[in-house]
Image (cartoon, rainbow, N blue to C red; front, top):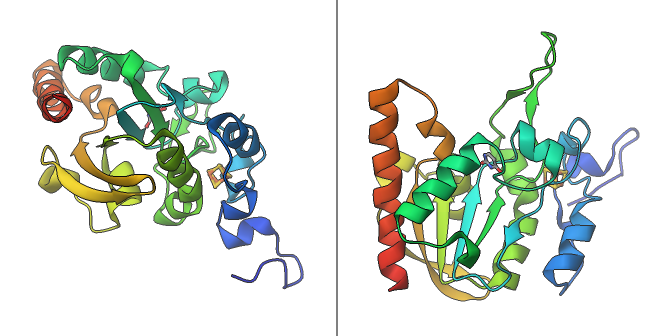
Length: 222
Ligand code: URA
Ligand code: SF4
């Protein structure tokens, strides 16, 4: 890819994190390098890069969409309301959160330029942004080397399986996937923030579905 050739262009025109990714680095070095990523325009308005966190040799690596408002402020993934749902569902499925590594398809918070007060409204990342950020996810997968990867929602599924992924068609069914550290299995499910939308009955059903899909993961772990 040619970068910086045309007048007025910048690194960000390439939509590619790879020039920022150090070769063969461990997770700590990757996290440090990701803090300075300008691989796409999303770093401009977000507070900080939110890299993955958790057990560095986890058997399960969970991928969300992107940091939310609270994650953007605190610098850690899944520490807001969606993280609360996820922690509860993992526990109910018998997966200890101490045995997992959690990250996101996109490492910067994308939100609506809020002309209305302080609240920042989440905006789904584009395929272009997901693909720009993927080199970080690939390095996390290589470094952690999980047996099972969990795609939480459509953006994660697209990052891991391509743009043809459809969460309601593809969820809950283990599929073999080639991973940077060897072959693995992927299980997709809904995004935990989906559980927070809708009325009480809808929430209960969505939450039950999330737990059922995570139980599939639990069974794979034995
Ligand atoms: N939603 C996500 O996809 N990831 C987070 O880290 C928080 C909310
Ligand atoms: Fe880099 Fe990803 Fe942030 Fe874009 S979203 S600047 S590719 S870390």
